[in-house]
Amino acid sequence: MKKILMIGWEFPPFNSGGLGVVTYYLAKNLNNKINLILALPKKYPINSDLKIIFADEDVKILKGYKKIYGIFANGFLEEVLTYGMRLLKKIKELNLDFDIIHAHDWLGGFCGLYLKNNLNKPLIIHIHSTEIERTGNNPNPIIYKIEKEIMDNADKIISVSKLTKSIINNFYKIPEEKIIDIPNAIDLNYYEGADSEYFRRLKLNNYKIVIFVGRLVLQKGPDYFVRTLKYVNEHIKKIKYVIVGDGEMFPDLIKIADEDKVLDKIIFTGFLRDEKLWAIYKYADLLVAPSVFDPFGLVPLEAVKFGVPIIISRTTGLGDYLNNCLKVDFWDIKNMANYIISVLKYRPLKNELVKNSKEELSKFNWEDRINKLIDIYNKI
Image (cartoon, rainbow, N blue to C red; front, side, top):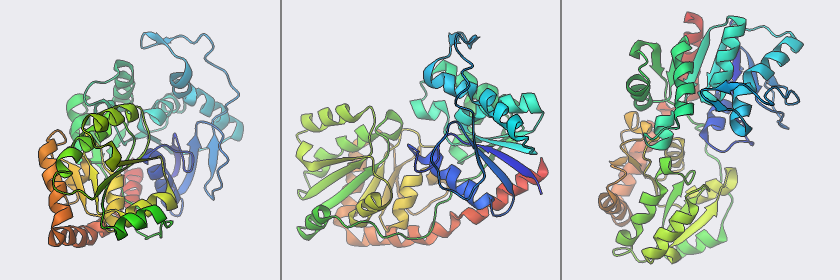
């Protein structure tokens, strides 16, 4: 049985997004079938049956660190670039042995590359999001260069969608045969959300609730979502847009809503997880995910599980695998508004979207993804 060192960056409940969620489910399900060690960059009070090691946070290697890519590393970048050095020290202390390194994104990938070079182990890099996608093709040149070096030197690359695979191929010049697309999966179990008196009263008063869930950053397109409201409001007066998440674009969204005179129609909840988030899905009539680039799209898939119809952008990777949803160009605000109005006004359309998309959910199971990963491990 192959021994795998999986290098993560974040892990629930200490996570800010989908990277931590996918790392959790991959590690949890792989752990039942192989010998797995999960590595994280710093000590967290995590209660888990997994074998987890933490990079030694007491080692201060980079005081006056040499230049990398023409800059002096400090702060967050310092933490990323020293991850490998700190983890190697811990591996030697614990006398750990493993066959393959499986690292997530550039955050864990640079660590994986360092270990590959120092321990002569094969490296799989699992790309959940590229700098091209995160920035709308306006990449930070340092992060892009790090990603390129990692992918050039990896033995195999896993992308979370065909969309991301094409970006790795076209923007990073990585041969297509080196990349395997394995779409994400979700926990298919249904969980009851916490009840919300406020949302319950909205529904009793015949309000339509349209939600956006995600980081408030350029990549996720929350500004395009907010700009649809003035058009939707012309046709549906009893409407509330609920924006779940936080991020740097929050002030911009307030400004847009104020200029469009729809600020009273929007509820900003901040970041929510688990029961509080499930409560939003419970009362939602529609979820809109107008991402400029989204490598996969865990949020809309989760909405489908809770019986919520979805509208996604054509630049969302999930669209390559899920057929029963409405797809729109993220910049086409009026067309997006028309789709929103149609789903809210025409019950048969909403019912068909919900019924047919839920029938597709079985495709997104972790068992299938784990078996594909193990097959990759065995071939390396």
